[in-house]
Length: 109
Image 1 (cartoon, rainbow, N blue to C red):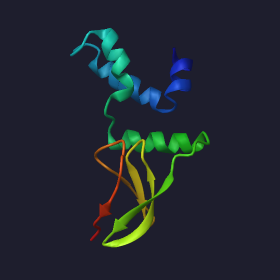
Image 2: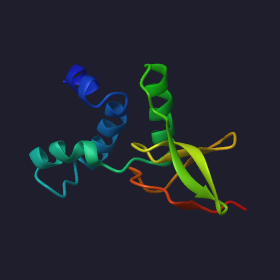
Image 3: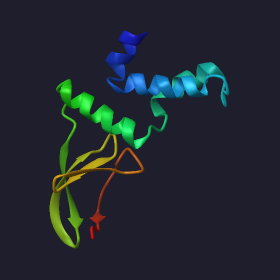
Image 4: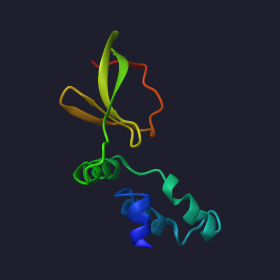
């Protein structure tokens, strides 16, 4: 099962399984349904940052250049849409919501 999860989910599999183990003894849904919903669990910012780093190490193309307004000026920013992270300057910001669908305006003080 671990091999199949590693192929289909990638590095996120081990973090999703940890989340599943937390919920195993207090199921909200029947267990079969919970296991099917496992890829859609919400992971913490720290876990998402670790997953991004592991995907980069495996050679996956994680970052994508997208257009957005930053402080009123149109610029290209680098984003990881799948895990809700953006690079602005030399900082990586993990956003509270993911996956990113569209970024139109960013205000930075």
